[in-house]
Length: 432
Image 1 (cartoon, rainbow, N blue to C red):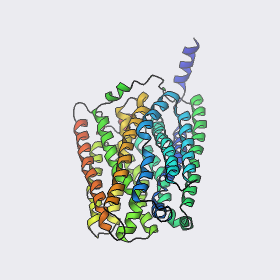
Image 2: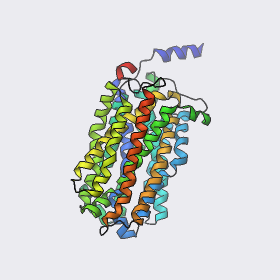
Image 3: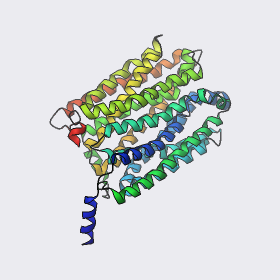
Image 4: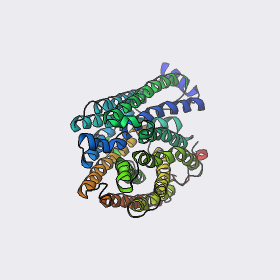
């Protein structure tokens, strides 16, 4: 009798108001802002690490790669944890790890200690990203999902924009390698603050709104292979797309300084153009996709933009604004389409696991390609006196663009066929 009464009460509760949903978006995005800043704090200080601590490009690539390494194993577990213990507890655990890691990184100039901090940070930050993604899917599915994802990415990449432009707004900090990392600790504290606020908002909402069912079913890992071909094609696109973007950004400021003679400030701004484009265009693309569909087609177009940009920077004297603008459009378009698409092809009860698996495989790419490109630069003796040494790495990135087009094409062929999930046809009005 009591169970029936509770069920009746739950079904009569209203859905969360639009204002409440957008407030949730604000505070989970605050956590992501801090996480993205801490991740990208390494790139502008790369040459300082080389000068003051004697780090090679291989060592710098390793520092960035070690962030991704634990997630090859743990981020899927993080997704399962989200599905099992809930969003608010998961966000808190991952937010704390995202704060502790940068603290450790800033304590010592020894590579092993700094790498330990980046490893702990990676364990928290990537799982935090999965938790936030799952939260958005829960609160916005069938409503303004792609638009919400776009706004979240805008807020997150504002953290990247601040980090990459830190030589401009905090030039005094780069007299020492440690100061930029201490600044990143302050921003990383937002990961905990955002998680605390979300905890309170979800507790209140569960008493006053109907949020939908929460999965407590046991995850059977053999079921992961049953997510379907469209899911795995999106995963494949994810790994090549992010492997073409983020490892490039690891060395971008150094590349611009040594291969094109820019200042650190201008090199940081050029790299942050990706973020600037994404901050403005991603929510607009998301809003557009919510209305028109055509998700696989747009992912294919975005991947095509990546193919020429690296070779333009390596072999031509065209203004660097041109290839960076092209890359910025791709960096805005593909995530606005790719991540929300998973919510339409995977059962809601397994979204945490699906996003965790996707992020896990993405991190395999980030780890491998940070190591590979760092090795390529070291092998080719890439430096200011040998700028052509960067060309091998640029070819690696360009080849990833071709693979992105292939996977997006195969996804479109799947989705317009009899086994499609509606990625090309679902709009916000049809999903509601």
